[in-house]
Image 1 (cartoon, helix red, strand yellow):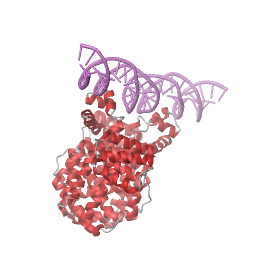
Image 2 (image 1 turned 45 degrees about the vertical axis):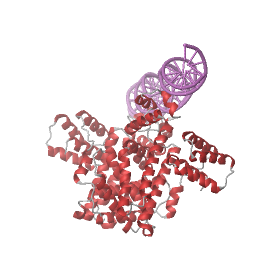
Image 3 (image 1 turned 90 degrees about the vertical axis):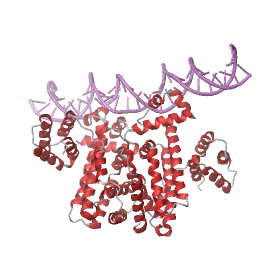
Image 4 (image 1 turned 45 degrees about the horizontal axis):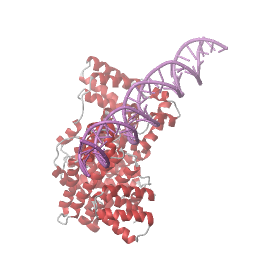
Length: 278
Length: 278
DNA sequence: TATAATAATGACCAGGTGGTCATTTGTCAA
DNA sequence: TTGACAAATGACCACCTGGTCATTATTATA
């Protein structure tokens, strides 16, 4: 485990500096002080490495903002500010990762990576949506999707500031500023562009079907990674079901929920939900 | 000239599909139906090709929105809507290019490309600023830089929609929606984050000094490209001045202004302004 | 038609890539 | 000290890269 983490941290530095494609496995091994063979003992491929990086950090990030939104103590402007704060704080703390993620998400053509990017994007959308519901309820039903996009735009454009110029910034002020803007838009904007149908279209676009074989492979991989636990147990049962179709939908649903509880395996829960068309 | 254009169009398709780094010169030549040698007759390197692409489209784009903003017939919400419309229309029309630009701008580590990206970013900032001044004048002095960033955020996040999902969209509605949002923020947002000093810091960050030799090289290259004209004449004079320092600042300033008039050479005008620290 | 000039070719280069695997090194219990 | 097992190594592989250049084909000129 220690070695895997070492490689990940070492590689992340290089990726942030030079980009994923431009960084060779050779460079990573030299920078980590290990041999090429040792690298391939920890990761099956260079692609698997970047996937692991994205999983690790995004699971953490999603679970962080999820907590903020779910906490009933956070209300009104306070919640909005904390939401932004958590985001930017997270980006700042893991700036190497944020750089890599922003760059590679736009850039990659690896199918699985795109799918992962979309997955986390949707998780964040869901959390944002739930926040907007809490804050404004009915009042923003017709503009909520546009609000999500505006919030995403704010996050994107302001995070560039501290990711690509290293100037110390007053995060508190930034969050107050953005919370004000968000609130203004939520309360007064009247012309929606993204309707429910449009949003659905985007969500569904590009969900290629997966073969049973592919799903099983991915499950098997995850099973190996996991410690003995309810999640692992659930995965093993689901794998069996993919092969034999023996479980009732309710049981499948429940097993997937089990898996979703572990932040480390939310991604695969998402995959399975899609696979089972739930 | 025809061959150069052929290669550029052919390459653009591949870049949009696969990305710049992932597309080899080999692929480009096959796709264009020419030999490798022929490619290098038109472009000194693969890098020069992408620079040419960016120059071509961005010069066009900048000059388009510049015209909209400069046109005195466009006022109020009309101007705002046309501003957005021109942007999205341009992105839609040249979607291959837009994809490449968005991806590669974030991704590249080529010094000159970064510099170019920053240049066009600043041009667009300037135009946006001038629009905000026209529309709101004194009223937005303290929030204008934040407004620029919000506008950029809107453009970024909504352009993704039609660049990466090909769904037909109602551009008019989109522009009305964004114009409303922009207007709301301009009129009511009160908490600025980006102060003049901060904005200056960002602008100045990462302007590496250039050697005379580098400047001369770039000028010479541009001189070759240009037809006989005032701009070419001006460039030749400026090249001499970089070598001999014989002209007065006023003359230099004037010559650079001449060059700036030609959209095709705005980029080099910007370089020279930086070089002369004007 | 003969000659000069230009355009186009593609075999070739050195260098780098992700990935493999026979071999060596290190670490235990017996 | 021995032997068994796992961990780690790095030479090696086939392949691909951006870029060059002697050679050939095409065109324009006389």
